[in-house]
Each structure stands twice: as structure tokens, then as C-alpha cells.
Image (cartoon, rainbow, N blue to C red; front, side, top):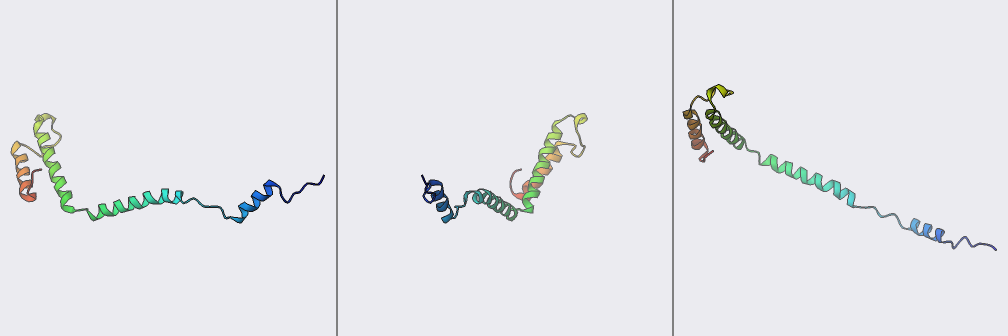
Amino acid sequence: MPQNTDRSPTTSSTTSSLAQPPRKSRLVPWLIGLPVVIFAALMLIGTLMDDPQSKQRWVDSEAIKICWKQIGKPETERKTQEFHSKEDCERLEFDFKSKYGENP
């Protein structure tokens, strides 16, 4: 008995898959590209919002915190001898308030 090879199921599915190009997934580029774009936008915003005065305000505020922390310790346990008395910390706070118009 002769077999009809022109109408076999494997041949028809092969020819139909060759007729249509395979559809590419667009999910992978979105999964990679979207976080990269968001990260770049955040970096740009951070750069534009960078203010030298805000950095100095933070440094001054931290100096006051360190001063009060050092003054609270006994003299033998102090790491530095920059701050000798409570008046030093109060002077730093007064300078901060007069420079920035707010409490540290």
C-alpha cells in the first residue's frame, strides 16, 4: 500500500510554521530596559537636587551631635579633645541657628 507523504501531519505543521515568522517576545527588553531607565532618571534627579549648602548643613548638624555626645562622656573616655565644655556645643548650635535659621 503506498503512503501519501504529501498530507502527513508533520509536513503540514512544518510548512505552516515556516510560512509565519516566529513571534519575538518583547517582555525581555522591557524587563531589562525599564529598571535601567528608572535608575538613570533617579541618578539625574539626585544630581540636579545636589546642593552644597545642604551638605554643609548636614555636616554642621552632625558636628553638634558629636559635640553633645563627647561632652556627655567623662574626660578620660573622650576620643578627641576638640570640645571642652558645654559652651562649645551651645556655640555650635547658636552658629547653626543664625546661619540656617532653624534648629539642628
